[in-house]
Length: 208
Image (cartoon, rainbow, N blue to C red):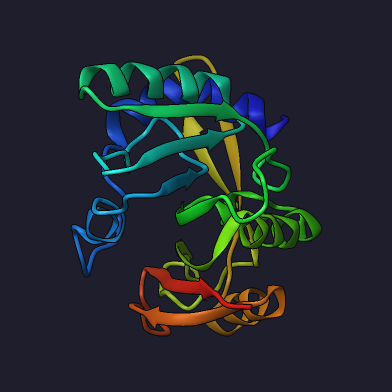
């Protein structure tokens, strides 16, 4: 099944149960990274908005699932936030060059099973980030014991009352992700994870 349709179908349960990003070693990482930003900030692959928080500047959320964005809008109103939502693929947004001061790219890149589109998504994030801006990115870690004996492309089931759906994930190892980020032009600013962490968590910066 088309992955956009899969995520549309699981959106209500995702919003109910997936309320926090799973960065087990630093609970407030996202908030600390983005909350004091006075410029433009982006949640790339925002889902129903579990990473949304108050910022001092402008906050945008992008996702390809309209059902997720509908729930994100409800969460924005519920929490009295001011966030502009846009439906788009992660590899082809319509933002201007050098528009964002901060980007969070949390647990979204690994949802793209096509290698060319993953690389294009990284190029797109580089294009829309300002020189000197930073991006916080996380993906599932192939080196974690949960995935060590699995293929790089895995399918994770989600059971609905009348249907079993499969989400597609690509498993990065740390060296691979860092290599792809650096090929795009990013510089590694800080790395929070290690080779067997549940998630690979990296902050990168754009320098020209």
